[in-house]
Length: 121
Image (cartoon, rainbow, N blue to C red; front, side, top):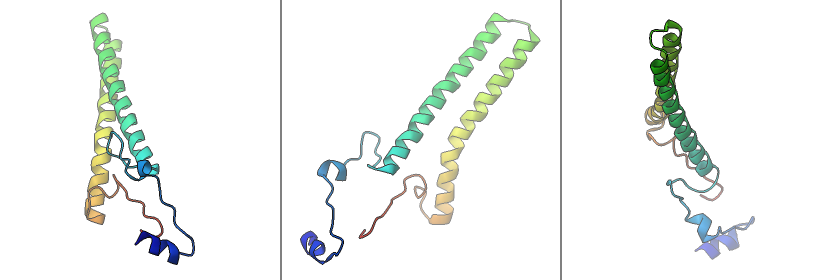
């Protein structure tokens, strides 16, 4: 059937190599730009989580080394508050995207795992 379509198609067809056609990677994302963006978002989330852990640890260290100093306690409190707001944003963004996809498109993965269709798909 593929050869019949290739003969009738005035633009011809390109058959991707089997490695590209069947590549879903370690994280389950497909090949191409959607897979790249998916992996990039995962990387940014991991780095954000490590940064949040680092901020919480440094805030705890500030409490240990400066007992009773109200200025240091205020800075520590602000650092922990900002860290938890950042973590909340990191968790809420994909949740909000899933809810928008579910309510407007009927599929929670519509915005999170887009399918880009080309000519002939």
